[in-house]
Length: 308
Image (cartoon, rainbow, N blue to C red):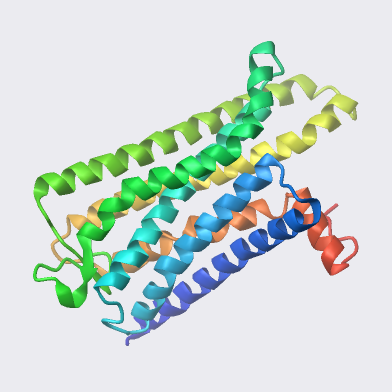
């Protein structure tokens, strides 16, 4: 193993451990909240669902990629490749849908209190759990074709290991491959477009709110809006990160699939960046989430942890 592959292995291990730790921390905190208060508010439920999807993605693809980066070959058979890649694709789809749900929920939450929005705001919390269940069904069905295209390295006569070094893909037919790619792309584009629209609307509402209250110093109205404003800014940052990484992933994947000779540097950077959102997103949620900080302080008995 040369120096570049060794560095890639260390970086990959750090990213996976870093990401799994952050997401597991959120899951443990929210599990503790449920055990003590027997409920989660809608935003916490959505964030917990996103942390679960991120953990599934990091473990299902991260562990095999780490083993591959450290030089292990043919450690997955046909069944193992199909199961792990199916779990990864489902969890990736869940992350897209859940991030979209979070941005739409917050956009409706900070929308003006007009009569048109009041009914939606009242009914919206009741839709969170059914929406999460719908996302599971949707992605389990959408990605059912993944096992058909994936096999172990030793079971394929026409191997294509451009992206994965431990599994291979099977080209059933050009039409089937094209239709499958179009369906998955349309799903991704729909949710990415919806979350981008919701974030743009939140940015507009925040800008208008800032313009209205900039001359109101220390009013109750200004202070009352602060938690919603902070949450909206956090979610805008989360969606912006996702959209940027999604665009980069799409461009890099297109380059790799059209290269005659695959560049190891581009391939390794693509694999690492594929997990960046799942690894970083929990740390965008933790610092500014008052309920998470309060639970952590109460259980760990650390005083004055809140930033000024």
